[in-house]
Length: 371
Image 1 (cartoon, rainbow, N blue to C red):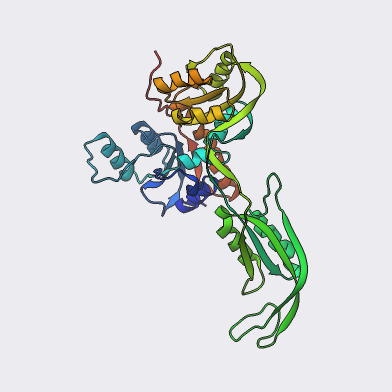
Image 2 (image 1 turned 180 degrees about the vertical axis):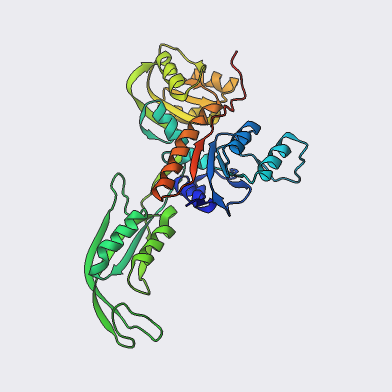
């Protein structure tokens, strides 16, 4: 059985919700349709002419990429231009293109976590907080016979997470009263008669991003035809989302040693470095893509060095004076997302027993040569 395009994107948006992307980021479906069966998926950093040829050779129906192919509203598509030819080739071969950019950077277990793991960073926090997932208290009332089933349904849907603990719920016994009216189909009770029933109050914590999913799981698993539940906003902050990661190394390294770690971990032949190569690195920051504007935030978080791309001359000078080292391995290091995201999607498809195949692009889209 093949997965539909909408199913694949549902997996994507559960992993990297569009809601956590920075404002005005060009994400989502950019070309083609998801109203079709997906035989093969190609995960790519960039959508270039060579990547599209690779997709055609693999009989791909959907490309999931990190960098957008449409950055602003199109007034026309001129197929004599390089980008116009690219769009034409994609359309002729019925290949849809879906973009997951800053939401994939920010997502837990996404680009910046993959990069931090590759560099051996531990106990990481975002360089810059972008949002929080507000919390709600979900309260419902169920017969004792269904407590465990409903508890399982709402926690499996993502409810009940508090810090490093999962399946957090609370129950208390009480008495519910209700009178089924004409047209109702009561699980317990008789139409027109006031009922008094022993029930259990079940409550748990629900993140805003999963609220609808958890409520639907509750309704689906509840025996009553009319499900009573309450949602209360909580003052406690939920999960913090942000760009980049700052973390500690397992053991101190010299800047020169950490440069070798970066080259090996991010698979790059050469880097640009500012700072004394003999200085000690205990805490490091990493941010995929272009990170010039985040150097000061990394310094504020206590980082001895930041690993990020596209550093300009004046930012490097300012960092030298401020006392934070910079390692610039280039923007293309985000290629780590190809294997990482392909594995995430593959596991979801296999778990749901779909035959759709996932491929990580093998095309090198680094525009620079190192000579």
